[in-house]
Length: 86
Image 1 (cartoon, rainbow, N blue to C red):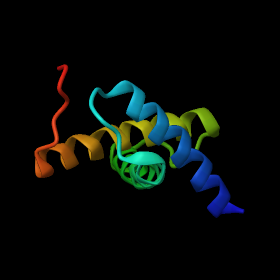
Image 2 (cartoon, rainbow, N blue to C red):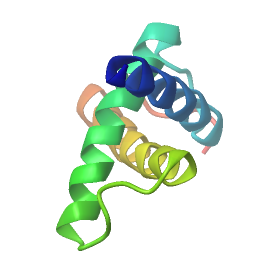
Image 3 (cartoon, rainbow, N blue to C red):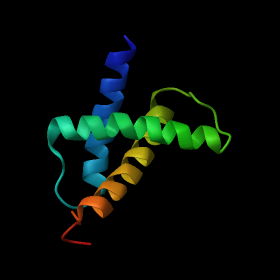
């Protein structure tokens, strides 16, 4: 059941991250993977800052979006894939 939860959160976070950040996305599967990894990264960062590790769907999606945005920025720095309309 938790795998389905991570896929749903990853889908939402990946989709919203793609809409918030300009440039081309990574496709449906790539956006889900970035959303899931972003949720892990965002959760780790929030725990290190002293915030709760859980808090419901909206909190989880917001944390996942923040993590996915940071991950996307890092990926763009490494690969050189920058947004065209900054």
